[in-house]
Image (cartoon, rainbow, N blue to C red; front, side, top):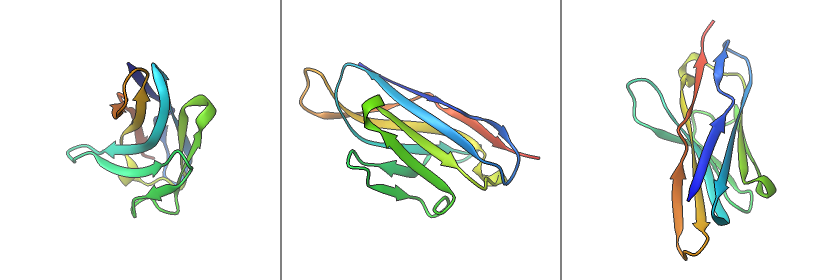
Length: 121
């Protein structure tokens, strides 16, 4: 119904920057809130940033002031700008998209498969 695809991960040095992208496609009637989560090795998946359809943002304390989430509603795409990355930012980053699918009245959530970010010198 809705496919969510992340991109932009890779290996970066501490202090560097990286931009992740997430695009939703498929039988979309309307996109809703979208957000980024991450799962570090041996840890549970945690929310780090989300953005509403109206561009309101919220960040986890661990990334506030360093990461920036943005959104292009015309492209059903969100971005996550990672600045001043630290080794503890190493994780698989997942995108979650809320959407109303064509022909259905309710909002459903869809996950991408993730993109890996490794911060190491």
